[in-house]
Length: 406
Image (cartoon, rainbow, N blue to C red):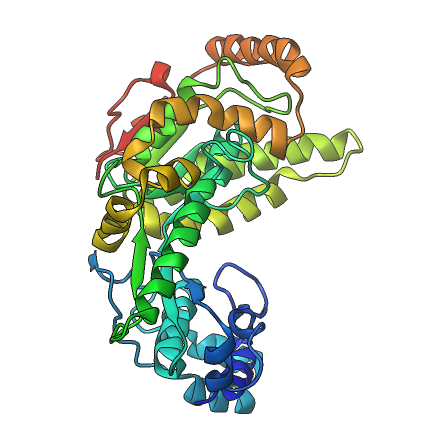
């Protein structure tokens, strides 16, 4: 299949709906080929290297993911024919069959793109780069800079503002997070390495793949991620926090739904009712609908342990010169999570919420007042715990995070 045909196919397949959206939207797969014009032969002559940025979770239905290609039964040709004949409603109904073992359209289309690139590369110097969960910067251009609330940042924001109080998440599961500046550094070094590999007299038989993850050399769990963030909240509270911080993690989806009723929906309905009585616009239930949609997608990755192999990335680091290691640091073994998370919430305050450091004194006063108010009221999370047998608190209320066990 030529590049132009593949681009057209992916554009049509873009009608597949995202699981986390209410209506069909473009997946954006066609953007992976939007910069490609002409046939692959012509492109191979002018391109020094072509790196496809995929995701470490392109095969998240597997428990062990190595730096190699995995089977994907779907094809762009078949999806193109199906999309041409079916309405969006019919596609929605067929979606579970189309996805097969993949949990959502994001991971499925990443796997499909890898497959089509592999089949269509020809003489193109191609490499596949698979970063894990990308978070704020470690150092460059600014410490803990970020500009979105995707992934775990959304969980951190919901928690430290007191809105998110329950989440389906196994605290013992690996949080495979990687700072975005180190991702970019590794991406550039891997591109140079792929270019060199294809310049050899015998080029690679398969496009090189790089799994850029933290779990192999510098593992951190979701429980540790939560604790790191909450240990920093007292010094860096948010001006727009609505209540004191308390989060319960559940392995069980059923238990999480029960907690949602008591800790999200009922308080949200109460606040909205008071807002209506005061002539204001109700918004809490709308906020919680967005949170639940987002957290339901994230929960799959927070409750499933995947063992990644990153041998190619580690070998790439070993072959990198000392000078280039200083210019392009990307070894996850060099990251201090304790130092990173000391600045993580600071970065969210400054760059995401545009909350200047001048607001910290007033925010700390507000933080202390919410703690005093919480201490004066019955501990609702503990009351909820007592309603359901089969759950128990693993860590105390004072530590702010608790894990239930089925």
